[in-house]
Length: 335
Image (cartoon, rainbow, N blue to C red):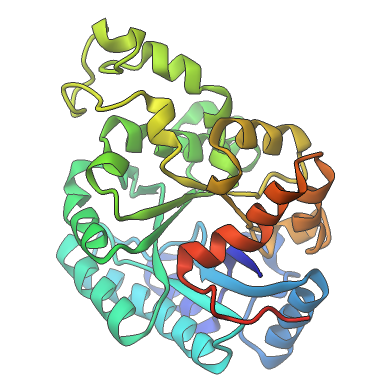
């Protein structure tokens, strides 16, 4: 059963709320994407899913997150996302699931919205952008969120914030999309490793977007040079805010996470992730509707079959890992 763990959805209530309270809009390039909540758009989305053999999409807000410094506005924004998502899931329970959006940076309000989303709205997990108002969402101030997600054993999905890792070296050069998103994924995994989140909170099932960015080709260097690493880096200077010593090599911690297949059809990227993490840590994703600008929806998944991986590994990646991760094995696949 093919479950698309990385799919976006922009109900009008949410986009109008974000424009009103934060002045944020979807990028102009999204204007022709089938991404709002008219019945025609929903029907078109489901038709594309059927044509691609996708049983279910797990919906998230993507770069336009409900992160607002004013707490009341952040709560309003998060609810304007979560409630239309839950409504769509209720209408099509075998086709859609959704992640809870949180009103960051407000931790207590986020804990309340997480509880409401998971308990009352029936959401399938939680989503975080890689940063919130230029602060990593792996930072210590958000620790109570990880405590609660670990207690619940929830799925946690990370997506770039579209900030170019807060660096003019990215944004001033027009590289926010072409490089910045990859760098955000990379740094989020690095922050998770440095703060030992996957080790300290082993019940959280963490998914990273876009094959983990540059992490697959950097693991040996991190093992050797990351301060506190049990490998060669153990003698290097300690990083402020990190644990005094890492419990295991960074490459081992990285393999505790899951990574979606969004790679813009790159065989090299998928092969690197497969070799770095193994097939059982890779799950299907599409970045819907973004990649529709460059490839048909079905090709987002079919490229996995063309890379030369063993058939058993292709089956794990496309059909088995995600249902097991979300506890959806009991849903019968569509034919």
